[in-house]
Image (cartoon, rainbow, N blue to C red; front, side):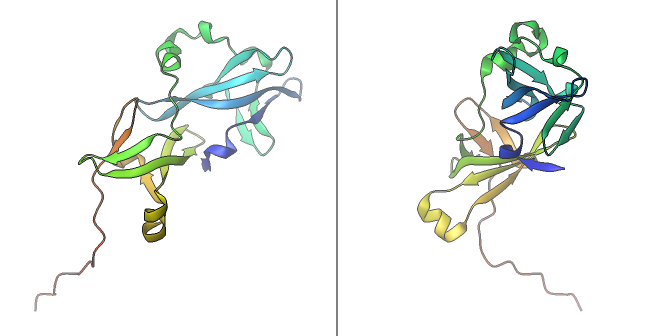
Length: 172
């Protein structure tokens, strides 16, 4: 099921063992190489420490928040050796400029949609300038259209120019 970024940030993290909230998932940890959410930065409920919840430790996503086995699955950032590179990037998707391969500016990332079972970002939503938003509205970009992601921008394949689309005449 696809969910927008607002529905996966600032969510309670619930423990199955205790049946209570043990942390709050504050922000996603996004791997820019494959647009996957590797985990979440969490604030511990007990001592306000910053911990990390890996996506594979999430048992279920319910309206009340994320469900995990126990508080023990939350890890200190320095314990996660395989995730060190991604953590050091501190990649933020929202607000990144988007342009096409031919350097045409499209807009900025305003939101994204995540497939909650795999935690891959499937759609990126771009907000355009005020003038373009009157004429063209907002833009939805599928992950297959993304060509490259850099520190400064997201580069997508060239967009089709809006014009009349005609079907070829039928051969008789």
